Image 1 (cartoon, rainbow, N blue to C red):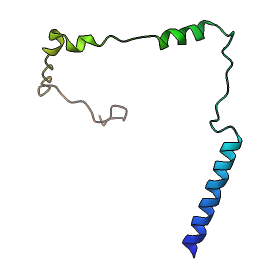
Image 2: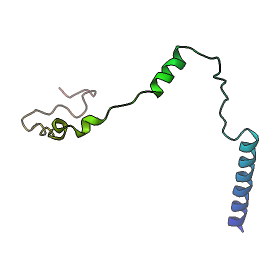
Image 3: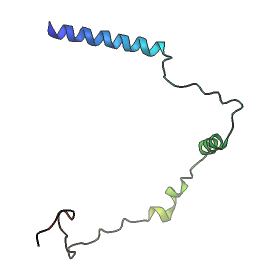
Image 4: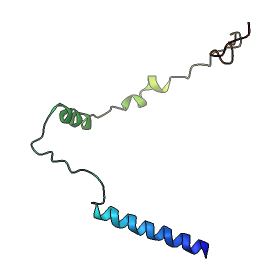
Length: 90
């Protein structure tokens, strides 16, 4: 009985949420009238939309011949205190 009540409440809340969402326009977005609008920000956005990245270098033989650098050996380095912000015993 307790599970049925919980499921019924969830379904009612879900239905109310869907109804509210559809009544508010569905997307929640703000319509923007772009016609006749210009400015540096919109020009920058338009330029950014038109950027095409050249990925042909991935097929270049020099790129394909690159090798990963070996890991640096740190065995000889001295380790500091575990927490440098605590007061050390002197």
